[in-house]
Image (cartoon, rainbow, N blue to C red; front, side, top):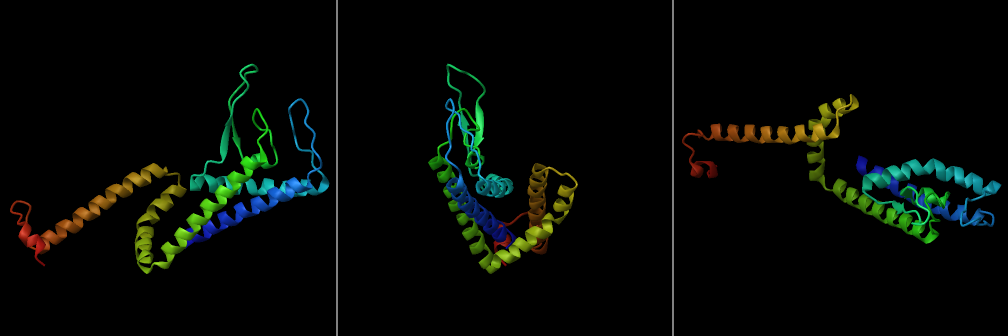
Length: 201
């Protein structure tokens, strides 16, 4: 259930970003290009919306990374001019249209935000369906109990990869112990293993 509320909050933040994005563009004064460059000059009203967008950007960027959403574009310099290749965030481009070597068009930004909303909705729906299945409560509960020591160790700085490797080995050990216990209960040894006895209950 925790994931459902997390994904729901992410979806709401993306939708809020879309709303603020359109409000910001509507309230901007008429902009002027200078030598092919543009930097938004805010009015008092647009500046307030800009602040709200800035406060929201870390949340939506973090959610996009969690969902695996590609919200960046690569900006290449003109061959005649040269310069470094830049990676530009489409979310940041809402308020800073020229973070790279050229102006990011608004339709491209809008597409990125709409795609983010759609993906977040998908995660939200899947997590709700998962939570509504009663057998998942038992599985998730057992998984949480197993992960408690790793959650504590992660707070102490344990890398994620270490946890994944350890859990994989723990599962193998548990499966081996269960198998050996069952074989012992059936009176079967590894030296004289009779598969017919294993099958019979």
